[in-house]
Length: 175
Image 1 (spheres, helix red, strand yellow):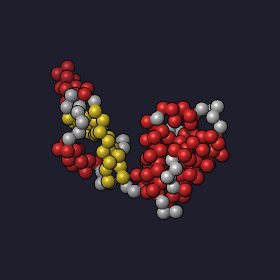
Image 2 (tube, helix red, strand yellow):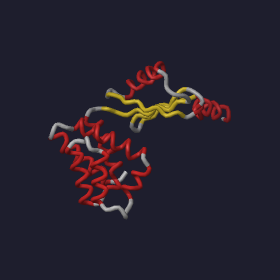
Image 3 (cartoon, one colour):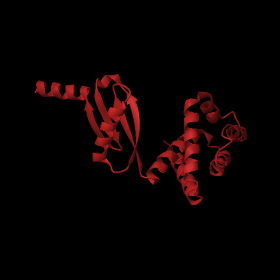
Image 4 (cartoon, rainbow, N blue to C red):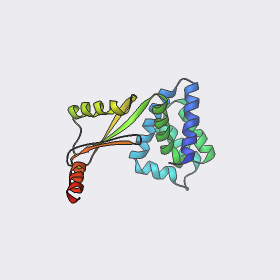
């Protein structure tokens, strides 16, 4: 993550908060982040030194025609500074800063299979031990953990996977 993207995101969120549009701009940034990350052609277009900043601005204004004025202002600023290549990073940083501002924390849950509502309830119960913030769960499937789950919140991790338990048993038996 570039420091420039963090600075742009801070400036945008400060402006959006002062205008009372932080949530609406957050929705714009989620849309931009998803669109840029899911479209390889758009990524290549934004980083291309051959394409003029004016053309990039026009294309983004057309692709994201329904965005807030604050977001359009970002496009204009990126055009002036020739920094369109960090648009996806700016959007991601904005979303992260918006979550911090609203007391929302992202919990990453790795499971051997897609998370069920029963397991989700267990994970949320475990999260309450770690954090008193609102939690957004992101599920990653990794069959290598065999069963159970690995929970990451910020810099804390709780490993309740079968693979981890087997490793512990292996170490104990080795000693």
